[in-house]
Image (cartoon, rainbow, N blue to C red; front, side, top):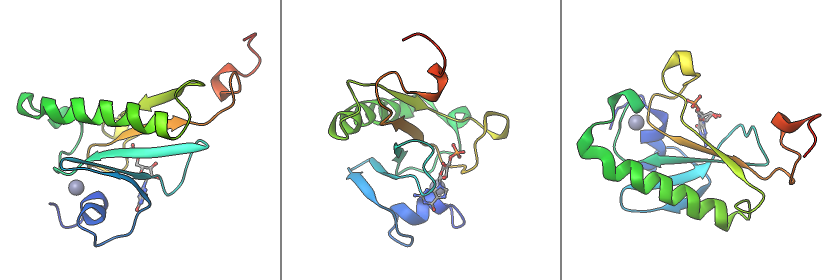
Length: 121
Ligand code: 5GP
Ligand code: ZN
């Protein structure tokens, strides 16, 4: 727990969030400022600053995050159309909250992803 970390505060119940999953090691909640129709953050309860700080002993956390993301994508109905999984790493990678998290971005209609604009799909 880091006192000034918003994600630690959410995990401890000190700050509110719209949870879609709460497990022993991992939680997931909706992003407060979504950049996609479905935008969910998968977050380990353990405070790890970024991917750079992930240690071998935390490998199970990464595995759980990825499998949880896959399951949430299915529950949100975005698995077949497709989705993005993103880790922003440190400031140069666009990281803003320094508590490890995996973005699930999806919910676009098939072929309507902004990246594919103007491309034959
Ligand atoms: P980053 O840029 O660090 O990878 O992404 C941090 C994400 O956390 C951003 O998409 C931002 O909108 C989201 N976020 C920041 N503060 C809060 C908050 O208090 N609650 C929720 N639900 N999301 C937050
Ligand atoms: Zn934290």
